[in-house]
Image (cartoon, rainbow, N blue to C red; front, side, top):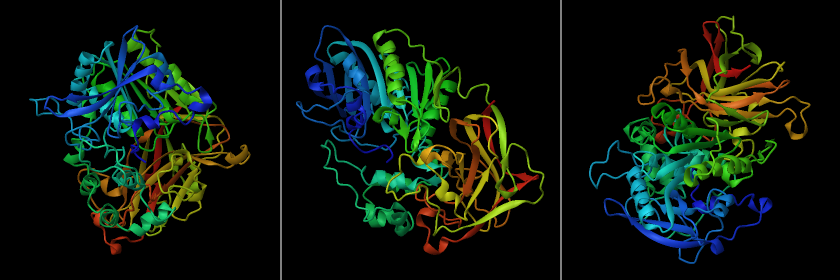
Length: 610
C-alpha cells in the first residue's frame, strides 16, 4: 500500500528487532506527555512527547508529523518502540509525534498534500511549513530539559511533511531526514507515473484512508473485502475507474474523487508539488530512499536534486539502499523477494549513517563525514561513497533495438523495420507473476519470465556480456511507435537476465531492474493530452528513475516493451477519451508498432560506468 494507513510507530523496525537485540522497555526509560499545541490561526494540533526519565542532561527533540495516527493514545499507553531504530531510544532523545492538522486527535481541516505558500501573509495563511514552525517553536519553549536543537524525520507521507518543514524553517531545526518523501504526486510518486494511474496502490490506500471528523480516536480497522484473492480479476471486473466510486467508495472519499477529476498535470497537482519551495534550506539534510521503492523513489531523488540545485549552500546528502518502501526501517535489508544483498543493509544504514547524522547535528557528536551520496550498487552488492550523484564518470550510451529481438550498443542500419503486437485492454499484461491484491513489495525486482512468454510483450536482449556493465543514474527510453488506436500506453522494463547455470532459483532469472509506464497521449505535454493519428509514427521520450546496477559478466541486458501493466496501472482503453469514465465499447484492441530502423531507431539511453 502507498503511504500505509497504519499507526506510524507500529511500522518501526519490529520485523527484525527480536533477532537483532533484546527489546528495549520504553516505559521504564521514558515518560509520556500528551499536549495540544496552538497554531497561529488558533487550531490546536495534538502531539505526544516521550522524554527520557534520566534528567541529568539535556536532550534534543526528534519530531515526526504524520497523518497516520500517533497511537497509542492515553497517558499510560506506551509504544513498543521509539525513534527510527532502537539505538535512538537507547542513546536518548526527546521523541515527539504529532497528528497533522485534521487527522485523528488534531483539530482543523485536513487537506491531502496541502499546497505550500512562498510567503505566509497573516495568521490565517497556514500550510504545513507554518504548522511545523509553530510546533517547533512551542516545543523548544515548553518541553523541559531540551537542548534547543530539533531534528525532523519521516517516511513516505511523513517524509512529505519533513520536506515541508524545510521551507522557511524554524531556527531550532538543525537537521532533517526526508525519507521516501512524496514530493510531486502526479509526476512519478503515488498517483500517476507519466500520466498512467497507479491503480492497485491508490485503491488499496484510499479504502483505508478517508475523511475524518476531528478530533477522534483511530477507528477499529476493517479491511476492505475484495471477495477474491486475485487482484487481476477484481480490477478487471470493476470496469472503468468511475466504478470504484459507484460500487465501493460510494463517493465518501474526497481524496479519491479529486484524483479521478484531475488526470492531467493541472494546477491541482502543480500547486501540490513541494519541490519548487525547497530553496534557501538551512538545516542539514539526509535524503533517504530505496532502489526498489515502488511508491516514492521519484520523490526521493527529486527532493535531493531540488535541494542540491536550488539551495547549493545546504549540507545535503543522499542515501540509496537496496530497499522497498520503508525497508530501511521495517526490515533487515538482507533480501527482497528472491534477490539477496549479502548483508543486513538496513541495520548498517541505521548504525553507520542515520544515527551518526542526527547525533552530530543534535548532540555535537563527531562528524560521521558522510559522502555526498552513499549508494548501494545492486548486482555487485557493495556500498559506494560518491562525491556526486550520478557519478561524474558515468557516460551516456544507447542500447538499440534490432531484428530478432537483439539489443546492442550499435545503432541499426535497417530501413523501415519494426516489431508489432496486438494489445487488448480486456486481456492486459499482469505486473506480477502470482495473484496479489496489493502492490507486492518485491515486484520491483521480481522475475519477469511470466511476461516474456506473452505475444503482446516485445523482448530484446544482448549477447552474454563479456565484462561487467554498470549503469548509474536515470534511464531514458526513446521509442518510435505507431498505433491503430488513438491512445496507447508504452511500458518499458529494464531487466537483468541471469545465466542458466546461476545457482538455485536464480537460474535463468529475469530480474526487473527498472520499469515505468508511459501514457501515449502525454507524449507532448502532461497538461494538454493529444490523441494519436492511427498509423502515424510518433516519438515517445521519457525518463525513468535512477538505478545503480551492475549487469555482471555472463548476464544479459534485456528490455521489454508492452502496452499494459495491470493492475499496477489502470487500463488504457486505446481510445482517446476521459479514461475514468470510458465506456466498455471504448476498450478496443490496437496494433502497436515499435520501430528500429536507421531513420526511426528506438533505444534506451543509460549512463555506463566503464
